[in-house]
Image (cartoon, rainbow, N blue to C red; front, side):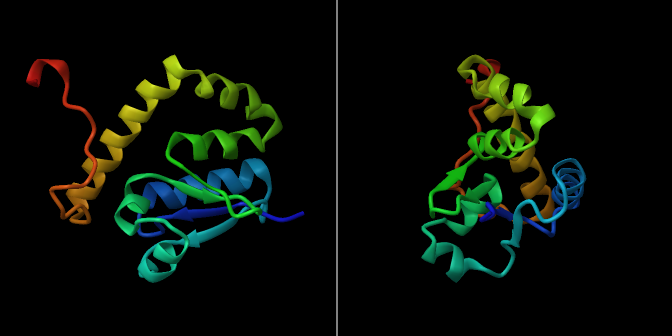
Length: 132
């Protein structure tokens, strides 16, 4: 069986913790984990913007299709039988979109704190309504 490749930030402690948790739940070697750090050329060759790879989780299906953001999590959760209902629930638009915004805010804060988010043009989550 060919594996999904997960492009993840191994410099992120939370990302490493999530990887260990996923391997425990799904079974070790269920997916191929690929550290994006220092891999800008390879990411571009795959059609993945390196800055976006830090902001959004990307996966590659065995057929070469790339998924990103919350959709990547849906695919990964769907591979674990007891988490399939959660994958289905997250796929509902009224859950998926608020979750997407929350996830992006969390990642953006972490990247800014760690000094990885250095461009003003990077996609930022929508500001809260009271600040508009």
